[in-house]
Image (tube, rainbow, N blue to C red):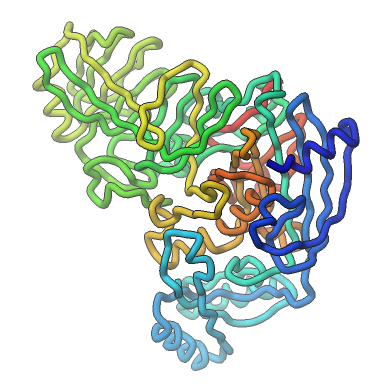
Length: 520
């Protein structure tokens, strides 16, 4: 397979920074192996600055495109599934003095995703402004007049239309055959609860570089802040259950695999009675992004939605913290051999350093109370499957959750619907088709690993990318497998203790739940 630009630049420049300007060669099959990105309109300028961080590790800063003089700020008043609803709103806006226009949201890449609808919906917009403040003023005015969903936006954020950019992309490439350090993940503050910036994780680990990881709980109304919303395996230990069988990044001895991962958790008594367990190290009854077992709303992944289940068994280990969440239910405390050493008729007790606690609610609390006795030894099965096959537990195994899949066998194949990103047309448009800051990962045919961030929500520097454009970037860089990670304000890359991208949150770098680190 054609060697990447990152490698050839290093050989020719002996680790000195290299800047090249390239053009655009089209979005055909050859683009996957080209030295340039295929996002945006034709013939966009592109510059790259590449440097070697260590043997087998390179960092490349890519800038592509420019601010178009045709771009503008506007106000999205509302999104609708049908044209009739949108037309009604346009008439309502005209009655109160606004000129409105209809934007038909098409799914022009339906052949590259499992979302087959040709038309996603309709957006009603009003106004074209050169200044963002002007659009914000109109949006605020519309809200006072009863149009509560009105929101200022930028024309180039709509990923269903072609753009000139600009884009700021940061790329780490790790050659597992050459790299002598360690590629791993870490939890924020080495704990499930709480959050930490990638800069902090990288600093305390003395990492060469770092990237944010998977999705997580942000607000307490959705669970415990910092809890990964999906699978997490740290040094071979499962610390958070999967969301359905979403795509994940598996790291073992510096080699990477991208696969659909699922978990199966089971407790069995000495007498042979058994029950499925619902999760690990999270708040009972609240399943962020759904995808659990016997949840009330759905057992399918549903991104950014919190499903509920009143009857659960949750296992807690020392990664969670000192004690389990308090509340009604039943708990048993296990030592490192699985022996029941204590039981309680309510939740909220100390977690042993080398043992665990099974904490149950509702009908599952009744089952645990009736079937488990102090002194007996329980069998706990914590199975992880990747593409349907059992994953062998080893101390060098790390798994980072994410989703959806972006590339399969070198082709753009976005599993947005299957992995919970198309549960409504509105959500699919604003999350998947819209341009946002993104982080994603890829694996090349030669085994090299790509970790990428794209800045966004910054009209002057970088507008962000859609799912499809994320896949295009990975494909252009030579990846044959690719997946999305957490993005938006969470996207952050650190190189040599320096934050190399500009996070989109007004408060600066966002504390996240976990990070992918390149350790020397």
